Image (cartoon, rainbow, N blue to C red; front, top):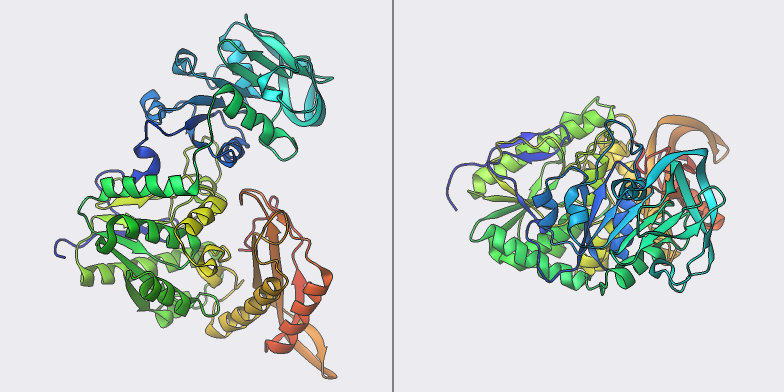
Length: 551
């Protein structure tokens, strides 16, 4: 391979960015005419991503678009239906988001949720007004039209979640009331002839227990969709898209060993084979045994071209004296860029950069372009990419949630150790060592984390299945010491915090109710087997208000 060196630069995310001339391809760039797909228009709701989750769970592909996205961008998806999200605005506000004309003119089924319902009614001649009493929280919904497709095979009374101040006072022509609550006489409306439906409540949240069934009824019984979007379907489509995008170009992929980068590397390798080169950087921040596992899995078992870079000392020197987590991310990102520059210079010319960007990364980094979105923390694959980047991005997982990525990994035949690898931040243990990062502190944390992980694994709780177990679990080394007594002697040693959460989408999370006996065993083993630790605590914070990571 010959040619000019790719130009890399550090981004605000603290990780890799590459300069490019044109935007890179995404799975959604090439829409299959035969693929069932739904376009979700986001009007600013905090629940918009959950709508996408519920549609995906019904095995229907969907994408989330800003309400004011260009029509050609949305229609390029070849949608079979539209779903209109909620939002904080009122339909009569001067700057309120508007309903695009193409939605009503498309002839396709439409489901409006909360503000989406009000907007639909407003645009079709109905009346929306402020309710005498705002409605937030759980409500009892009474279905008054048992023949309505949305509520097919569901009870006539069901709990729903409300979050609105306005309500519909007068229906548009041709619509009928199909459900109500004490505070919302028009809690659901329908125009079966045009296949237009509206819900004042939020079926996408878990607080509406049968909400997923309502959305599934819309997709199946109203839209006539069959639910054909499976992991196998995704793999086939993604491979085709990658081949079309890459052609005979060369692809560089930063491989961390996490499920996201692993699935991307495997997809690209299946698509273009030896045109892919993976670079694995051992920066010393990985968990116990992970560097060896990555090399064994992808070089020896998967047969990929893998370049392993040992750079532990370089990273430790750069992190000396640094305690602020965002600064750690920035420094590690800068070093990561330099490593890639050196390897790219040695290896030759690359046309594409493959990244394991997934949907939660984009959302938390405010990368979706949503007005008012706040950056929770920076992610290594999104944000800050310059407009003149000289390599195109290959991001086939950009619209997938974590559980979907795992399902695709299974379909690709990756081992469980990779597919169910606990989620891991880009900077690794550096952000789980609270305070200064040293090799001694990393080793302490590695040992404690390995014990916690093993105890969870032996108890069958290392992964989340059927509502049991953990979606993410890890140890944190705190920047404090505490007094203890060990062997009749006083100690003044480190404190380790254990963190385990359950979640469906990683957008929200709850702390895992682990058995006391398991926590006792983990704590006992850590203080006895890990030098310099005399106290273990368990984090019982949810997300929000906390984040999953401690940084």
